[in-house]
Image (cartoon, rainbow over all chains, first blue to last red; front, side, top):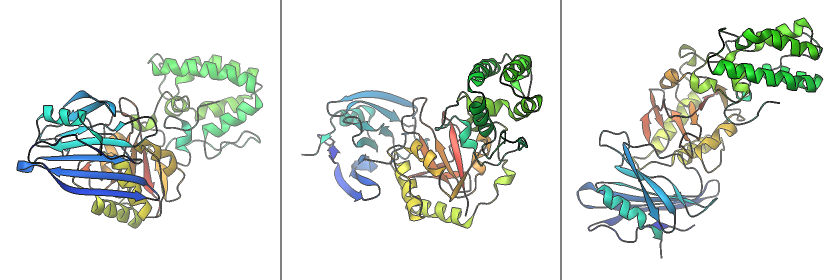
Length: 123
Length: 258
């Protein structure tokens, strides 16, 4: 399973945690959390199974990724139940391929979209 | 004859508690089984396939009228056109007793659900609906499932509802698979650990701990949603949220049996 990461992280962001598993029952999945200044956070997730919808936010915006095609980012207001400020819908390189998404908080919407557009397979 | 599988069909009501008082038939070869109207319709279909096609077409038309608000009768939307229905049935050789039995079993909810154009669950229809009072406090197993799912939930970022619910279920001996959350519903319907019930949207917050709600795909939702009730008006999947009650798609509810 390919792991997708942003091509370039915003200044001050560091890897906070990496979780990768390949369950015989449930298949492969990964989650990489990057921590930034002042509580900012960025998470990339991928899985071959077990996804649900990303909940709808107060606004949303399309983006285009060269590997994953057209994506949709949901943005949540601070009083939302969602634990993040933005969350992309699940992205796939093609039918029947693993799902990937990007989410986070403490970033400007333009930054979030730029990061989503730059997601690519980890070299 | 009728669509089978998926969310919008009468099969999903099989074995569900019902308040409609569906009669059990006494006529040999014309028995209402556990699937109620479906069983009868299957037998009718076998007996009078050609005539039944005509009857179905007519029923669809009538139910379409009812759905569009053109019918004036309350409990039985076909009543306004019952003369036509009766004629078609008599063409098939059905006795008056049989016709009366079919008529008594057809409710708007059941009929429209059977035709795939109505979801009694999401609409909170009266057919087979379990009231909040009868939901009870749940079971020890259900509370264990909910507690375990809560202990394994995370603070973010979301999107993995099915994975976390499936893993909680697996730790309790129930296996479900698939890419998207909505796929769990048909699998849970076959598990002895659960029984499917019809719960109104208003009562979803009153579900006991361990009850599972599966929201279908559609209306812009690609994967659907699944969660386990915590018994206090909240749900848990990968995250803890207030119980989702208005997702914009149909839903199915499964109560723990043990």
